[in-house]
Length: 124
Image 1 (spheres, helix red, strand yellow):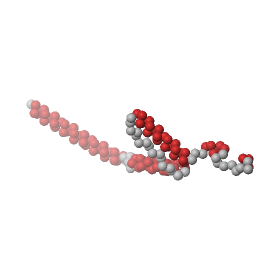
Image 2: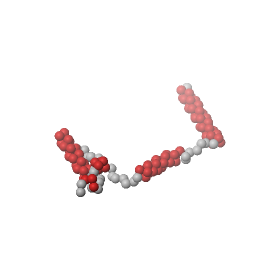
Image 3: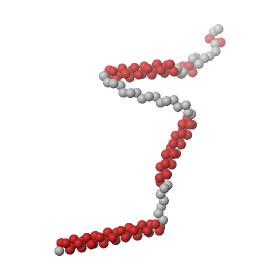
Image 4: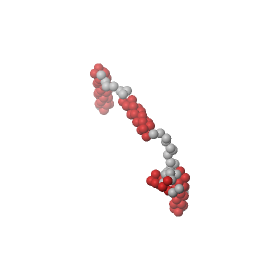
């Protein structure tokens, strides 16, 4: 049986050359860890803890994007919820608040005048 009649496999051709097994990944990770520790050993320092790789997320891209969109929408609604609690003042409410402010200003002015008269009387 010669090579021309053999059934092609994944290890042959362009697909096979791009395939990386999990064993090769583990070997590369172990070699990187050894190099990391050796580099810090040469410096005489303790290596900092390495960041852990993100856990595998089996969701599709569409599901991830939908979850992100929902989270952003919820955040926006939370921000705008506070803004929606307030309303503009009506004309009669504005007039009432203005009358209260004017009354307080008049009381403050009369108090200052009385204090000024008392100080003037004390000086005399």
